[in-house]
Image 1: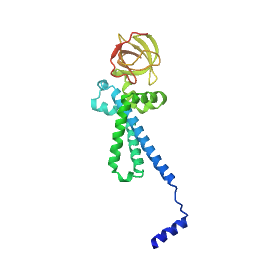
Image 2 (image 1 turned 60 degrees about the horizontal axis):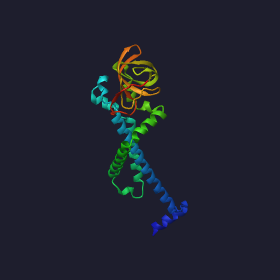
Image 3 (image 1 turned 30 degrees about the horizontal axis):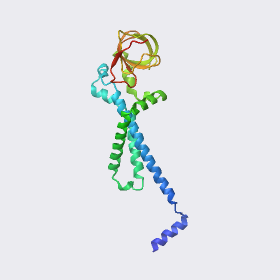
Image 4 (image 1 turned 45 degrees about the horizontal axis):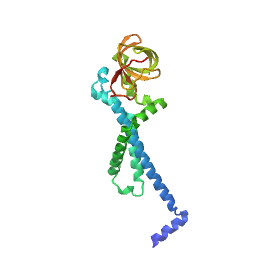
Length: 241
């Protein structure tokens, strides 16, 4: 009784008032919403990771004087992996703060979050959503490409036969000019150049080229690939001006 009386006196002293039930419910709902958003954003990040790994040019490591293992490590999209890990943590954190979250094993929460994000991310990738996110971010956020350093690090090696940039002028199907992503202008020449996948010969198109330096800023290309997407869709010979 003394303990109960002491508690009542402390409540009166500190003027503690009971909270309304709806406030607790609102807080719980908000936590569940944030938990769901964390899972959803984690799934989006996973879909982009799958897209980037699937779309990566795994065959070009031989041009870089690297073995496949070191090229693989260089090609991992670390920015998206960090984002994915962050939202896994947020999902765990939010679930633990739900009304019943404390009863569940933390490992079970993490594994469940991962499985749901992987499942949803796989669906998003299959529907082309991962590709769409990557393209939109590449075109709308200037520093996004810099965060994915491996893209430009790999394809800014003309002395090793790898060049990339944006088409600025077209003379014919085997002769055009590009501005590389480091700001240099190159004349591209070739003989029956092959254009892979969705790469198109048009001003403003961002492309990757395989070939060799012919002289100065003249690059002799034998193959052109799209900068983003289109990998694995076969090859075609460009016959348009």
